[in-house]
Image (cartoon, rainbow, N blue to C red; front, side, top):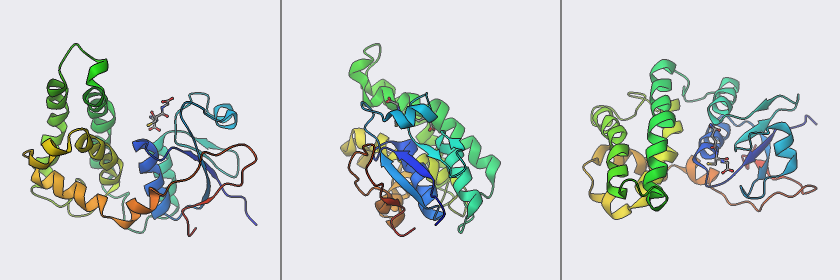
Length: 214
Ligand SMILES: N[C@@H](CCC(=O)N[C@@H](CS)C(=O)NCC(=O)O)C(=O)O
């Protein structure tokens, strides 16, 4: 039997979510080790001392410890929906999400830890990205254009968090197309499948197969 890769993941981490989405869609079978961030397994830190999830350890020992690289690796094995098309446009969205929006999202989520500005102010900074998304999504179904692409998958877990900070505000915010796009993702069976709960992995535990039907 071929040895499967190991993926260290944390259910609620948006980076881990996007990696799991790509792995699930590409049916890249792996053994999943659910991590608790305050109690990271030694085995994970040995292969990736920077200590972030997700981390994928391939059967040949190669370690991929950036979520975007895991997505690209998984989809390069099998990409049934063409998520890898239009890559440059997609990478620009992802870069803006990761480098700019994510910082404002964190400050908006934890505004009490950043008292230099108000929660409202941090939200407004994040909204600049949402406004760019809204203008794209009011013309096209996806950030990737007429088809769902890598950027749609990679960005959506972060928009989900942004919407979740103040759901009442989000429901009446002037971003109907982005709201509809997010709602489509939330109802997508692929997303619900990658949100399955797993117990924290402990050394010696037999890891569950991921995705389930791999
Ligand atoms: N650039 C990394 C970022 C991953 C990341 O920051 N993950 C967070 C959880 S969402 C983490 O592991 N943080 C380490 C910690 O909180 O100790 C990637 O894309 O994989």
